[in-house]
Length: 159
Figure 1 (cartoon, helix red, strand yellow):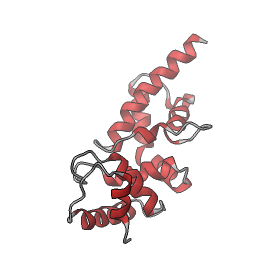
Figure 2: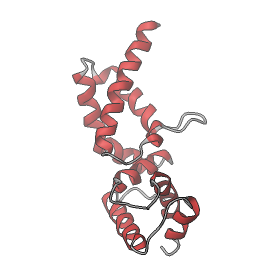
Figure 3: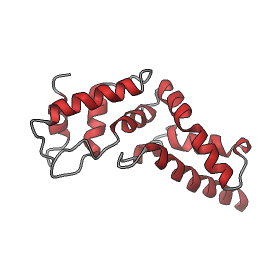
Figure 4: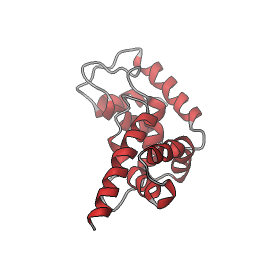
């Protein structure tokens, strides 16, 4: 995995990368790959995605939910294993939010929320592409699900 730090430096010349960043990056990448064993995101691709989430002036991984970003990256890339892992990890949370909003998850709202979240439609990336990794993916998904469910109900009512 030599060269991952160089990918970060090339992708983000505005972010200073210290000596300790390389070992931290290797450890966090290994942790993400272990957390989502069935999800096979190309390491170079993931590091470019991760680099896009770093904030200047100093590259710091401890402020990011790297494991969650790894799953999100797999979903963005349309990996079936990532979609399955996403459903296992976050499907119940989506259902709870939809139910708490007074809606029936079996009404098709859940599938529409999930599709908008993790499925690329045409040239538009899935909404999970906007996940910045600053909070947990689970919390982000639940907030998105609530807003999206409300939007879909309003949209359906207007028809």
